[in-house]
Length: 136
Image (tube, rainbow, N blue to C red):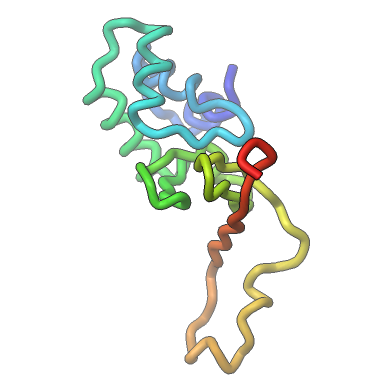
C-alpha cells in the first residue's frame, strides 16, 4: 500500500476505486506530476476514470494538506505527495525536471531579523534552479 494511501486511510478518508488509483499514481519520491499526467497514468490502471474525478481528487488532497500544489518551473501546476516531509525543490531550467532536496540548516535562518519587518516566520519555500545532467 502506498504511503499516501496509508495516511489517507488513517485520516478516515473514504477510499473509492478512483481515489485509490489517484493516490497510487502519486506514490513515491520525487513525484511532481501535472493533473494531466496523473490522469494519463490513472487511466492505465482504471480506464473509466474521468479527468474531472482526477482534478477533484487532487483538489481534495491539497485541501487536506496531504499533497502540495506547486508551480516551481513556471509551467503547469504539479502535485507533490511529500507534503508531510519538509523539503525544498531543485528545478531544471531546461526540461522542468523537479527533484526533492533536503538541505542542511533551517531556511528561516537565512532571513536576517532586520529583513523580517516584524513578521513571525512560520515557513520558507526555497527553489534551487539549474540544469540537470541531461540538459547541462
